Image 1 (cartoon, rainbow, N blue to C red):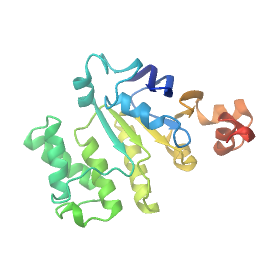
Image 2: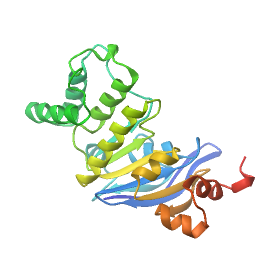
Image 3: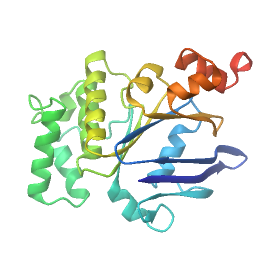
Image 4: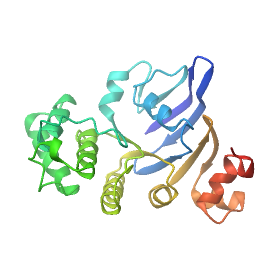
Length: 243
């Protein structure tokens, strides 16, 4: 289980994230919903030990990000949309195998994991070509694969379908749902209402670094008397007064 407790991040005089708390259970997808600059990515970077929080913490099982960052990294996979971070001269298979071994997998474990994820994401036709010759959608799928090839307990997806076409986006949606069925705890960050509603069991709406609403989409619609997630979101971040 992922538990986030009062995470706060300040950059000089700017508070990017303030007292954000939530939990994600195995087999659950929780969405972080917010406009650009709301603090979603900063929150995920702190959970992934890429940024040190000003205060607060997050933990996976018995390990927390302050005292056990190395342990945490072995339990987490993270993908930032638009940031493929691959080696263009290597093939897709070589990229995934490299990251699998970085995360402690044996040669055989890495081989089996790469074969499985390549099949799941329909990459077998081009997995042995150099990544530099891939389309954007191909690169995004390999980037997704290498981020979770080590089969982490917790998966963090930050706008993973950014810039992808409809078919590639659906494939990634289906893969995320497969991970959920395998009892992974998943955080899905987006400002896309459609995919948030399609994928998430619960949502957390963040505005100016603070949690302004959380719960199931249907319950929040009832609480705020809104028919659509878009209307609910606009209401939560300030309604007609939002600038």
